[in-house]
Image 1: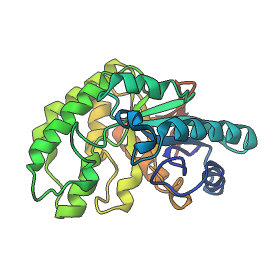
Image 2: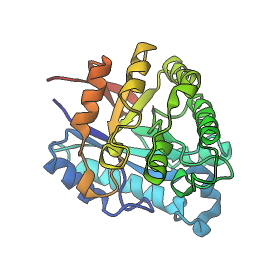
Image 3: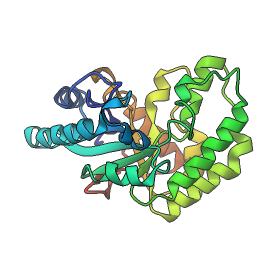
Length: 274
């Protein structure tokens, strides 16, 4: 089976460690068929320029794209390198989102929500001081809005806040109260021919589950979901490709016979085999 990791970060992301070449070398050692370089671009933060705490995206993302294109050429025949971007909070500032898209990531765009408007990343929230259910309601509302955005390929780590809620409280919230909201997100993705990401990073954190987990991936398929991408969310060479087989197994158990990679934003189905 062709193993593909469609969510990785090079040191062109503020929180990652290794070069694009180093990430590709790790992908080859892990036996991957394809890897997507999807460096962070938090759209509403672009306007801060050199004053942005995450770095100057006007420099970082063009560098990421340039490095990915160089890797495409260097590793041709050994590894399919896909030029991507993780576009954070695209609905917070549409003009800055257009600027992010103009950087020119040619193959693959992940859309993600790491924070609500006016709030810190879910990583930084003190969950003992907030109403967790209210935070999750607002989060799923924003994901539904994000799902309506046309210029992305796959929606990243649907249950992202659970990573940190579990780590900081020791508990995983019951998502049954949000079933309709999540169904609405899935229906929008399906209507717009968008993919849902199975993010395997949670397998190696307190959560011990993919993002989203088996039940929600199965629900996506039940509602008519066609496209699934699988990614590690790796921020170093140590995690490139790690858990991809487990993520594919989640897709298989949900009833998918293929997972998806993207070239020039066109979905390509990769058969799931035993």
